[in-house]
Image 1 (cartoon, rainbow, N blue to C red):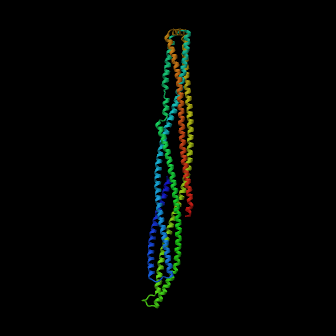
Image 2 (image 1 turned 45 degrees about the horizontal axis):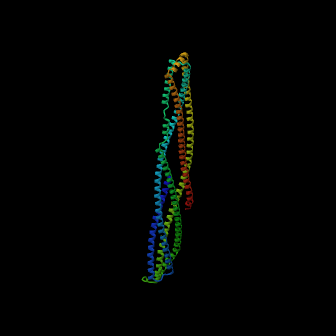
Image 3 (image 1 turned 135 degrees about the horizontal axis):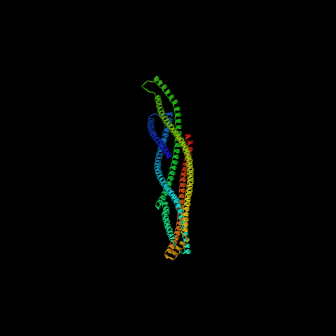
Length: 536
């Protein structure tokens, strides 16, 4: 933007200089027209005087031919000035048109940059939301691992209880007796199974699928995100086209400025040649004029001595006429010299303008070097930022793995503790059963075998245990499937985030490369303009 503003300022200054030059040329055209009218009037007066008087001498004829030649030169200069004024008007219109196009392009670029900043902020919000979801998903995954280990522990207790029931059933078949302690133990075991099932239902709700669905973005947001990405690509393409158009317009303006500079140099050279010719002609005429003045004085003195004062000599009148013509010619040449000196002053002004443009080009080259250095610094800073990001990611991974290992160690310790407590409880129950006496146990088991209700109860307990085992296996399969799905979605989101980050980095690198190419083009253009500025 700063470079474009500077280019626009230089173009505006060039337009102002061209307008001033147009004004100077128009004033010069008017002065030349007035001089031409005066010369035509003088020429007509001279012709009328020649018709009335005697035939002029050879000197008067040469003076008239010189005046006619100067009139033709002035007419030619007038035509050239008119064509130059027309060309300058056309150039001015072209410059105004280019300036309007540049203003429109600048406004479009500003609007595109505002849209791009807004899209980047929206994209950052989406990325932050996804990262929050991923972190929550990781926490829920740890919780699921803990619940999975608790489920395995409960399954082990259920298997132990079922083995105990099977042993009790075998003893029932062997002894055919039952006791009240065994009934109480069976009721306690069934109650324990119900409690374990209830705690299993409470601690392991079916919320993993909901978590996966919550991690996935909804259809509206995904479609909107794709639409915004397409819009960003379109805006970037339009911005590139606008940049190409502005570069082409600047190239055309530079070519036109080069043509104008060459025309000015040619015109200055021609004016210098005309000034040199006019000075030479004045130097040739001035001694002749002095000789004629001396001759006029001598003739006047002779006439005063020889003739009476009432009768002027004809030779003196002829000399006076010739002297008057030479004086008029000298005056015209003097005016011509003044005009040429004004043109030389204008040339000096153009030379100062060229000097200013050269200084401007030098300053632009310095700015280009500064921006090139800035781009290199930006690249180094971007590399440092990437290295720091990679280091932070590595540290985060190490911390995450260490936390996972600590959690796993704590969970394993908790599982060992629970397993030891369950084994101690099982040994206590077994010792209690052994102390109750084998006779009472055999009698109670025989009574249970004779009665139909207790055997049906045992069968129902076995069926319930089988159902619980199937249910646990199904839960394990569902949990494993949901965990694999969650890992797959997390991996997919991670790859998407990596692709987005790579895309952003690639876009930034592309912008840096474009800025480098623009700087190189500007340096080449300034290098091509520097010798021309030195010549001027």
